[in-house]
Length: 284
Image (cartoon, rainbow, N blue to C red):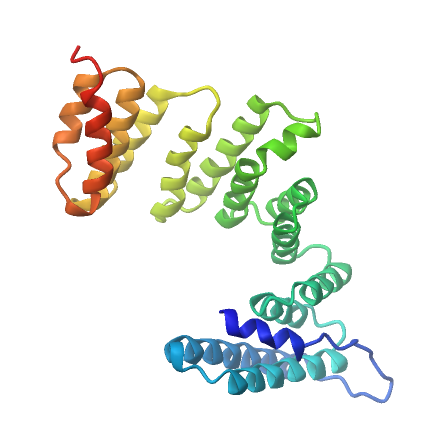
């Protein structure tokens, strides 16, 4: 939300200092206050999204500033309450106050080094700031702490794909090693979330990211994946991929047969592109 970034002018991170004269909340009270803060910020962003062009930016800043103030109060009274640091950091990240968000995450990590969500968020920050190697280490820490969380594997795979050249420049990884680690990450995300088609789809796309193609394995994946989806555009999307892989394998006639079964208007442009490519290919 572009207008929300203006909040960074007002929402500077206060120094969290615990005073011996400040009475800390009991754990239940702290949890309730945090729950209320999270609910309030969700409501504020939801209302801002609904307002669209009619958004009152002054009112938005005022509401978010009050929430930030309340986070500061909560942390001053409870300087060891890690969930509040994490929630506050996520809020500041949302309004583009990345520097203070990082400070909060580092503080949370200092207090408790065994929180995967903190490791993951630190990895996100470092990846976005152009430090992929450091980001990878945090992602790997998150995976060690929560090996069944698909998102952490997915983000590692994405990092290894998008920052491939940076990893290779270090001389510590070969392209083959990166390709294997990348696919392993996406595969693990799929295994950990078998009912979420998005992870499986990204794993399927990873075959196109390989330096050395694995056409037969890719074809088998798209054929099997099709059977898990609903008839219509979902299954036909898989057929487009099957046709593309078959063309790469130079099995042009099989590709044309598969492509002929794609009829959904949503996929018309992708189909036309493949049809044109196959028209220039041999018929045998």
